[in-house]
Length: 101
Image (tube, rainbow, N blue to C red):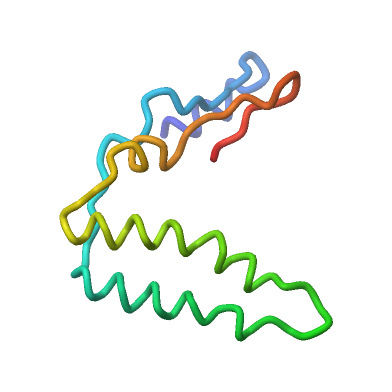
């Protein structure tokens, strides 16, 4: 219902979304071994790159491995609170827009 009202009034207002308060809580389910198995699978992503084409799977692997390392540490009971505080944060884009990272 709220979205319908917002849609009706959109010619009078400009709506924006702001990530000001962060993510209030994260529940990491699964065992540490589950996360280690998933990390091991991610280590094999580069095998799916197509020779002579873009190396997209390797790029994804390089982005995901550090995240998986943090997930494993957290599942083992050793969370890096700085990592989790910044898992989704707003970054200024200079004179341009802001970005979520």
